[in-house]
Image 1 (tube, rainbow, N blue to C red):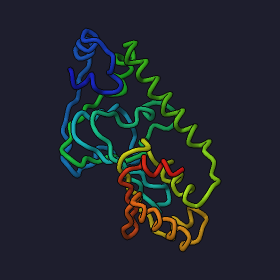
Image 2 (cartoon, rainbow, N blue to C red; image 1 turned 180 degrees about the vertical axis):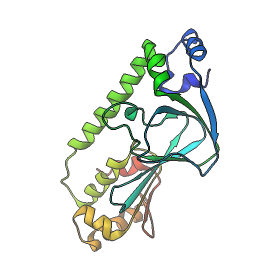
Image 3 (cartoon, helix red, strand yellow; image 1 turned 90 degrees about the vertical axis):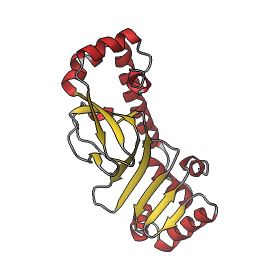
Length: 219
């Protein structure tokens, strides 16, 4: 029960509330071995999936397959609660375990019948959705102008769930140049300059960002 209370959507709930929920819900606990997918992008979301222990990579591939973005998530967390309801209820990211990971699933039916009836949980859920909507709005409103370096950083930033921590962007230089509407040489120069400042690491078709918060400070 204490582990559940660390999860974002259960924070602030009393022990009595937790006991009531645990008596009502049929919690589906399971383990996902390291290297296995928990869910894949475009799969239907029919339950809330909570990561209790372990570490997970969130992977996003753009529709035409020219780049793939990876971001590390740490437990405890919940996977895309915003797609449980609405006109589009498919996952927009893939999630795979990078260590042996414990997960908890709550079906949409049980969510609606029991969890949402608790006032604290309902407030946590609404706050989570509101925060995601406001962050998305802020990202959309960010200006696309500025230097090529700033445009590159904003491009990476828009792919992030959190503007901090380790990120990996898998993209060919010519595809990145197309996304930036710039020449390959100009994009390569900016990326190499960022690498010299130890803000990114360049490998073949891979850009590693050890600390996104440091790159963000360059805007």
